[in-house]
Image (tube, rainbow, N blue to C red; front, side, top):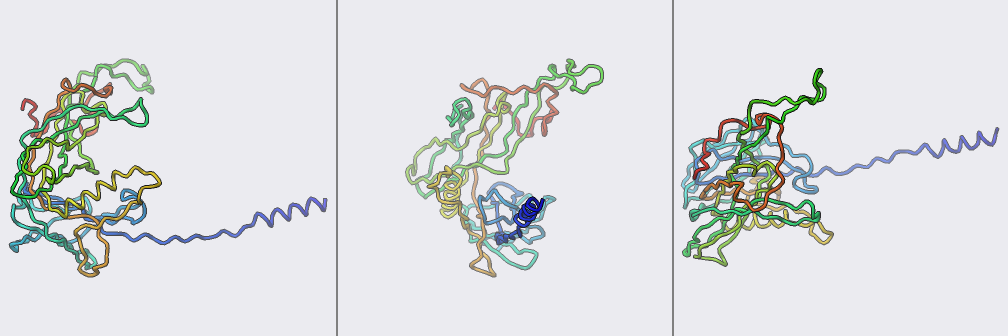
Length: 354
């Protein structure tokens, strides 16, 4: 009995371990500026946030920076003030504001605490017009052969001017497409009191329209170093087939911008960082400094880049019957209006006959 009591007391002493408190330093919250102005009529949007310095730029806590005073000043001394929207940290120019070719623009920021920032001036250079857009379906091999990526690649055709050095930046505008549903396949829910999972076809509606935007925009860039003065056809966008987008017609908009050498360099570094494969030989993600500087502390790191650019836009309507390869269509056995964001009315710019 005494021997058993001795073992119990010994185990109690071993199990009482003093917890060790680990205190990790807080990562500095860096001011991040995201936005640009173009020669298109406004409103143009500037987004202010603070993000962690650790890990990927998409990790950690992202805090909107609200109640800031933001203005844009041009090289002729004109100043326009931005207004914060209902979404915290998002600021917009007046509707009629648009940049002009040959004029440079600077972004001025004053935070609620009194700290001030400015961007270096960005000159707006002319951009050649998009002559046409073309597309083709492609299939991209992945590590899983049974799940290759299928989608549509869009090409822009334009003539590069020979009398200037051009740096190009391509983005996708708001996409929209026809949502095809099958309300005739609707069945009652499994908890229906009289006829669970029984067929209950609906009279409406099989066709809707949906507009989609992505918070994380993909983009393409190029300089005319290798094609100065020549006509070009360049792939600038890839739209993945998710089984819904290309069941009928998809409307894509391409924005072709002419940006400064400094903006092109910043975008190239961002593109390289996004393209890291994730192997042990890759460089760790880094904070890429842009053209925003602190007027109070020159050593403060500010992320992001304020871009001022001229833009040429064009849209293309992608028809399913013109695609050689498509993803297996997803079936929507219900009214198409049950899809989030879908409406019966087409977007104002919808004209698939063009």
